[in-house]
Every structure is written in C-alpha cells, then in structure tokens.
Length: 246
Image 1 (cartoon, helix red, strand yellow):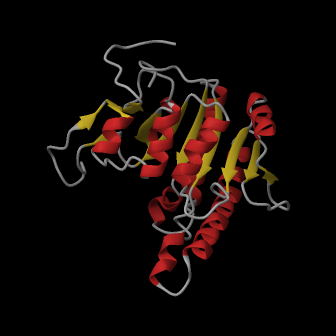
Image 2 (image 1 turned 60 degrees about the vertical axis):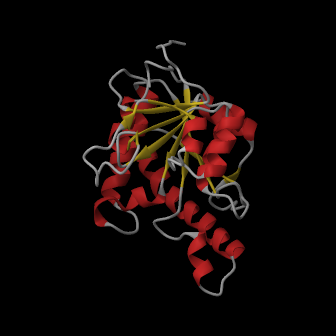
C-alpha cells in the first residue's frame, strides 16, 4: 500500500467470522490478543490513526432469519447487536495491549457505548485512541461493509483496509484454483463489472461515488500497512499505472 498511497488514517474492516479464528465458532481469545498487538503496532510504530468496523457474522447474520418466519428487519437488528458483543471482546483486548479504545454505536446503547458523533470520533482518533464503530449503519438492509465505507468517509480516512484470509483479490478462489491471478491494482469500476465481491455491491458503489480507496490484505499482515512490505490489492476509482507518493 505504501507504494501507491501513504495513509495517515485508516478504517480497518474485520469480519465477525475472523474472530472465530482457530476454534471455528464464537470468539477465539487467542485471536483477540493477536489482532490487538497488530492494531497497537499500527498506532505506536506506524503512527497511524485507526478506526475499526467489525461484523457480527460469528454470532448472527440477519439474512439467516429470512429462511424462517422472522422478517429481515428483525434479523438485521439482531446482527447489529452481535457487533456490539464483538466490540466488547476486541476493545478489551486492544486496551490490554496498551492503547485506549472508544466504542461508538449507531444504535443507542449508553451503558456500553457512546453514540456515534463524528466530531467526537475524530477527536478520539487525533488523541491516539482506537475508535470501534458498532451497530452497522443503524439501519436494516445495510451490511457492515457499507457501514465501513460510510464511516471511512465520515472520518476522513485515507482508505478502507479489508482484512481477509488471502493476500488480496484474485480472479477466482486461490484455494481452489492454482492458476488464480492476483490483482495488484484494480479500479472500482472493474470490481463492480467483474463482480469480484470485495465487499457487497452497495459498499463498492458508495466507495466509487465518493472516491474512497479500498485495500485488501491478509489479516496476518495488517501490521505492515504503510510499508513497502505489505502485499495486497489496491482498489481505486481509477488505475494507477505509475507509482505515486503522497
């Protein structure tokens, strides 16, 4: 990412499923300590300002209930609550690792989180605190991918960093196809046209319209963000045929 853009403030998007880590369900304490160390490294060593949006898929996905007699709105509200459970775990781990955390929720949960207020969130980040944004967008029919792009725009982030199981975007699943081609740079137009499913289409469309770059990399490599060592895919509204520096 360094060779295309030197970030100062990022929005880190973590899936709820990532918290399952090796145990395959719920929240793996080993992962919490692991990811917390990497986030603290970004702040203390890389001097980045960091916000996090985390999903709730390790606990519940709202769309699951559409298969039964629940409606989608109820399901999505349950999914929003799942993200709050996840922050309680990851926020505690980051603070244990040495950096203050402020959690800000899109839905009122005053006993455990502040309301999301943009100016307050910006002040927290400027003071070196991690801002964990939970509750999605606060609305049904919107995924945490869309929430990540929305919060990145509101918080004037330089990029959304989506941490995944693979080192970027491929034209097909590299775990199943040995001839899968890795993209180093992509335009958001291509991502939409090829339906590469970096994020859901609504999130990609918003990123495209508002010129918000997305960087996709392995979870294991997020401590390398802002260096030349990181491997991933840089997705922008236009191709960067030449290396640039900011």
